[in-house]
Image (cartoon, rainbow, N blue to C red; front, side):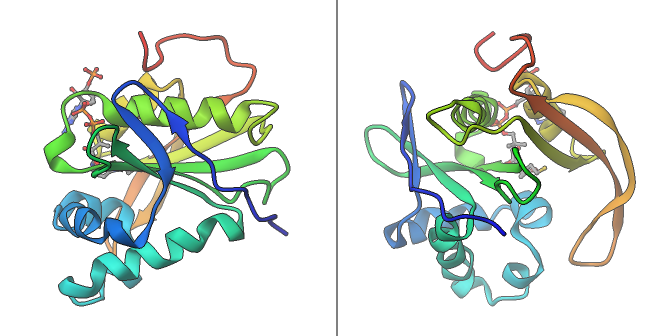
Length: 194
Ligand SMILES: CC(C)(COP(=O)(O)OP(=O)(O)OC[C@H]1O[C@@H](n2cnc3c(N)ncnc32)[C@H](O)[C@@H]1OP(=O)(O)O)[C@@H](O)C(=O)NCCC(=O)NCCS
């Protein structure tokens, strides 16, 4: 049984991690026009929604996600508050002391390691005693998604193995996937700041 989470805000230099709000619809619509965000992160229900209604279909459950044990962060520009990316810490404590993370970066904001920096910040909060107090965070990505592998590794999520035919696209196509994880006790290594 998952517990509700208190919505939280994390400030980095140039961006802020904060809960999504309905006013983010245009920024989310822009992100969902990217075929890779749709393919790897949006889920079948969003993909099957008409394009002009997808952003709301994506947003509403994520705004409500905190109440259901999912910390869904918008990564917004610190000056304009425009959403550039998203990081989710989901299924918090479904397995005791653990959660699963996922992320995307809007095409216009790519190329400055924002995914790894935001993922690292969310992980530090998830491990902190005054955050979620978790021990293990895991993630998966299709083997062909090499950019996601770089983000995971740079944010300190070590490769643990290959899960055969794990990820199933909305088309039904299956992909072998990497399992990565970061533990609260892992020593700082090649993380986002380095
Ligand atoms: C994966 C994603 C979050 C990376 O965005 P980003 O944080 O802006 O990443 P960057 O462009 O700064 O690149 C980060 C690293 O990945 C590498 N990279 C990026 N795209 C790559 C690609 N297609 N193939 C190989 N490496 C790639 C970069 O060279 C960089 O490596 P470095 O840190 O060693 O220098 C973004 O491409 C995205 O949102 N993709 C679609 C959604 C997705 O796949 N989410 C993850 C689902 S598991």
